[in-house]
Image 1 (cartoon, helix red, strand yellow):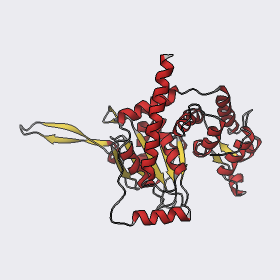
Image 2 (cartoon, rainbow, N blue to C red; image 1 turned 30 degrees about the vertical axis):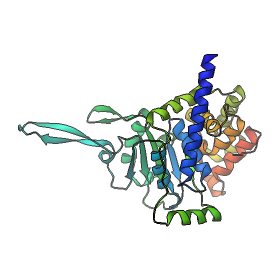
Image 3 (cartoon, rainbow, N blue to C red; image 1 turned 180 degrees about the horizontal axis):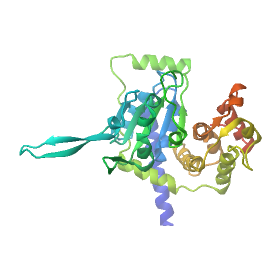
Image 4 (cartoon, rainbow, N blue to C red; image 1 turned 180 degrees about the vertical axis):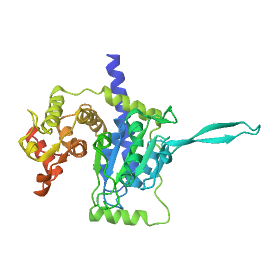
Amino acid sequence: MSGTDDLMGEIDETGKRLVAAREMIARRIVGQADVVEQTLTAILCGGHALLVGAPGLAKTRLVETLGTVLGLGANRIQFTPDLMPADILGAEVLETGADGTREFRFIDGPIFCQLLMADEINRASPRTQSALLQAMQEKEVSVAGQRRGLPEPFHVLATQNPIEQEGTYPLPEAQLDRFLLQVDLSYPSRDNEREIVLSTTGVSDTEIESVFDAQSLMAAQQLIRRLPVGEAVVERILDLVRAARPDTEEAHPLVNSSVSWGPGPRAAQALMLAVRARALIQGRLVPDTGDVAALAHPVLVHRMALGFAARAEGRTLGDLIETLVGDVLKTEAAA
């Protein structure tokens, strides 16, 4: 009984911190409640997020704000075509000491932080993009034959501009799969844009404070994994992911005719963690199928690809996932 009481106490305390964190973030990020919730969900799950949106939608501002509110050491890398892996990971340099001795010393790259913003990640070459693969999956990097652990916790929030594709290198499937969620940003409403204009063109910016620190955030990440998930929710997760894979027995008919490749087991793992995080963020103890429906798009959209015929017919992954949610989960894709 005491174990249950301890868990309930941790849930209550973490829930209060999350409410405070969202309120603090809302001081600087206007009208992006779903985006903030999804990004927090990815971080609470211990994962990474890919932020996709047009320029000027506060992607960079969101990452900076999260670094402050979550109490994490943050770095930013502007990805460009001439960026090299050493510019991210660091390198060994030969130094001469006062006594004339010479030795190599490793200089940390910007990846040695707790929250890394990879700005316009698709502008770097595949060789440089691949430098993030090991870091994102194993939380360590290999430089000069040595493995070097990254600070804990370690999260990558990458941004991508969907409009300007000239001079870009699309992320390979293996790297896309490393992102727990793809968070799509849309234009603000008129009222929200009015508030943005008024709040960001004054003399001073809105002050924000830390709500979490590294230790309390990692404790919250462990708590997420202890939250119970009902059998019905587990089955709906499996139904949805398996229905999205073409040329399998459980594939949805529309998937077979439209999708060239579908989500692997990481998608089910991501949903399993994300529904717990979303429930906790919203003040609920147990996730339900509504959480599965709400998170289907951010979990699946970057883990699927439309075939040529489907693209030629004007089909989109968003519409396809919405159909899957309606048919497989038998519920509206409600937030």
